Figure 1 (tube, rainbow, N blue to C red):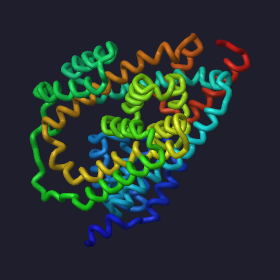
Figure 2 (cartoon, rainbow, N blue to C red; figure 1 turned 90 degrees about the vertical axis):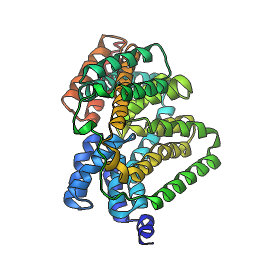
Figure 3 (cartoon, one colour; figure 1 turned 45 degrees about the vertical axis):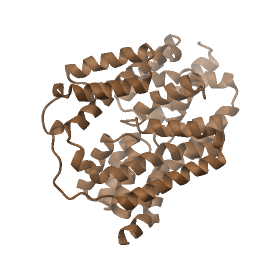
Figure 4 (tube, rainbow, N blue to C red; figure 1 turned 120 degrees about the vertical axis):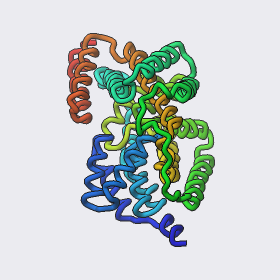
Length: 396
């Protein structure tokens, strides 16, 4: 009964603090260091060891790392509902802001949008190139990984279904896991510590997701397939936005044709000026194809299932995270995702880089990302440059 009471209680100070952070702190994954300072050093919500375990857990699982981490911290200290609502509060200000941006975007003259975004579209290519380089450097450091990467890249370029490539890479990596680096990371070790079975958390999580589905069906029934696709992608997005964005493009632009490629590129750019994660782009798409209600449900279907999943599986993490077949399969997924980033870079290049000035913008963005220049500053300068070069001087 005490465990049930804790998991159903709300700590409003924690939730308000998350809301404040989500309204004022920019930086995506760079926010993790800020969260560590806030939750470990200042507020002492969790010990540093628990916070680091949360980082390891959320990196292993799919979904937005930063949001799942906040859910994990809130759950460990205050219980299930506080963790879930606190994590959602961190994103909520960005959802409101990007919905407002989507409203004005739909209202602005197309010619004006083209002028302002002509120099910004190369940012999308730079983002995918930089993400590919980071993933390649971090995960594809053995010959087996490079061969699998090339295979995945070819499959993407010839149009094989993206989820089929994921499964293929997953099982190939499990089958050939003897080619992976040996050591503690890929050893068959299972923790001997007593396992806590999160029965109450499972019931609360299933209830929360069921209520979300029922509410969405009542208010926006025609968008249920869209919401389910969002959740499906969230459970494949190892690494967060760098992986989710190409999945969104393949699903919502290429397959479902809910939004044009040009609009999707612009949405990625707009998502960069909000303080929260780039995955808030689903709210932009939801508003673009529906209404404010659709934007809110898009936000909830993006984050609620992954936060719930993180909380529920957290007790199992130390017992299964070292099993070689699990690590091998995840390695295969990461390689497949790296190949996807490479293919998206190639596919977006001719669309976003149409002239020498656009290529110059691409180089500026790449240098800015390499030098860790503030994204909002980088995009603001690019908007000003686009207005001057393409709006005033018409240098198309």
